Length: 394
Image (cartoon, rainbow, N blue to C red; front, side, top):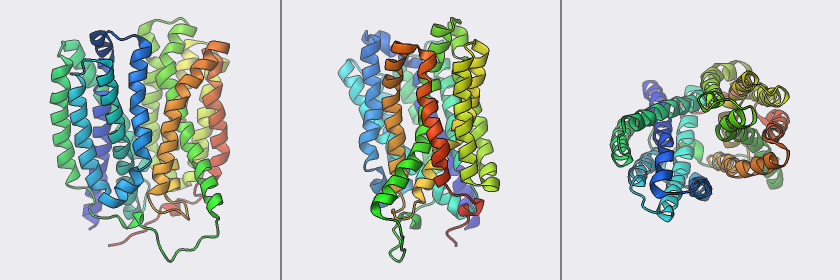
């Protein structure tokens, strides 16, 4: 059984990576979609916004789906559905069809996200050591590789209508192979323990869930700062070239990968509370550097520090929410994931509005403020590393 759990660890890392591959494989082809459908920026942005909208909708019942049908089944079905939706996206002929496909992709993507994390946390409990930040690191690696794959196809002039079905077949085949090694059945940790007693009131549990969610929200908002606004800040506010403008995104994503693979041994040694608090502090410090020193070098370095900080916030918050006493397994996980997706949906227009009023440089105060909140909320995470100890045997 120990060997099966170790194999499941690598299998769930593969499913995380495949999800990142599938998503990022499309991103470099966005300009072609805009050109082929003759869309302006506002129309394309509205179509892409259907993705997080769909994720918010399905995020409301993702935990129930995983509890009822098991994380393994949800991962397989939703991942295959996402590859199929990606394959037909290249054939979208109107804005409405494009938006509808993005909405459906968002619906299944949230299911994949919660199921992957549920499976990963189950494996983590069986192993008795932290692996969750490394699993998110596998997603980041997959996203980087997927972006390179999409860019290569674009550079070779391969039509999108060929690329997405072809890569979808490859990714689906890899997913089916990896999924054979996932832990199967109804996970014991997703069931409410009827003998458990908790002193917390229902209102107190909800408040704790919201505050723990704020830690993950800081990760989501900080990531959006680099993803959405990093290049624009370098090229627009600091006047650098388009070739250099992507350096902020690259620095942040590279640092996130490092932070996520380093996060597990740090959590095992120092505990989730200390690691998440340091992550929140680094997030705030990185954003303060970006605001305080308006140079390209400082901005790139600052976003790199942000990447190190946010690397651990999302996975540790999701783990803490899933462990929250007074809630059935899976509910807190789904709720925290839903809060983070709200951040991805709300933050871009909010930062944009503030940037129009006071400048993009100072609009980074918004993710910095959420990071400050996370510094204090991280105190709700487990203090001791042995909180990750083995909960299941056999």
